[in-house]
Length: 103
Image (cartoon, rainbow, N blue to C red; front, side, top):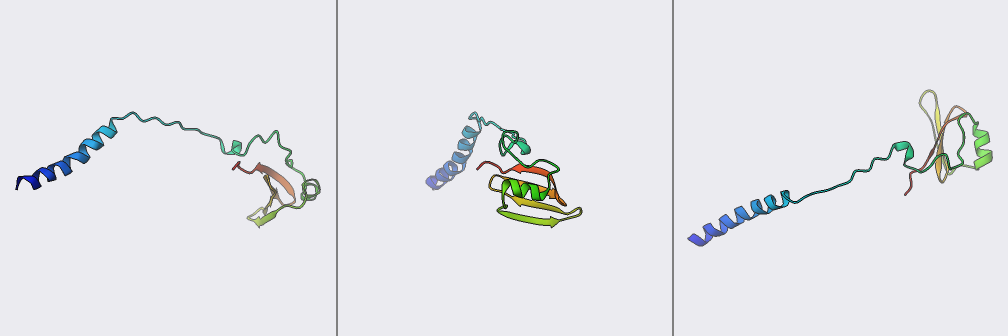
């Protein structure tokens, strides 16, 4: 009858000892924070549509977009999707250009 009790004790104590040993091991991790606007790369180094340009000017310079979304909301916002960036328009004018995140 002693053997089952010894096995039960070993099965109960072994996980506790293992958890205690693992908790005492040093743990180290680095946290890297990249601001949202910096995640795609250097916006200054890339030729992007400028605030205030018309949609016609953007399409003449950068070509037909891969896709569009909108208009959405009030005032109406339209997005033009190019391979490396997205252009946001309010009405017919650029309000912002964003480089797509690096993959």
